[in-house]
Length: 213
Image (cartoon, rainbow, N blue to C red):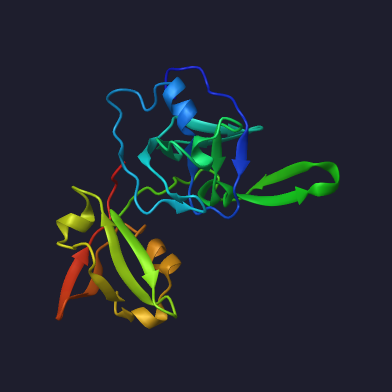
């Protein structure tokens, strides 16, 4: 954290996670994180094999892995009382948003992890956000339902509501989209035109992602 000694520990390299950095709840409690006055928001859509995760999302000053430093990574300060993110065996979890900054080699024979940075090493992680938690439903996972909304975010400012269904985004119909593609779109700081089904109505809504944290 800014102005404080670094927290050192063992972290899970979670290639299957779509997240960034997670600090487990015992570390959060012991280090009194996040510090008073730091802006954080509620976690959206966080879940794993153990169920829904809880906590606040903010940023730490940096994460150092070996000789590489990632500045201001998006960070979940876990408040879980059970499950992986409450473990005392490791201090946290490192997900895809950080790992995608490297070419990764898993050298099992020598029990080592080799990281080679790519051009995105110094790029900001999630510089903007939408405030939307979206789930993909249906047999083909092409029904994109809004499951959560962050208060005072582009989602609520645009008039979106829980259980709205996105049927098109920027003139691309839902059957040609994926959940990953929607997330990528909503990380671009420009207006996105959404067609949304709300009950029997079809609404046209403009969503403009911006910096939230």
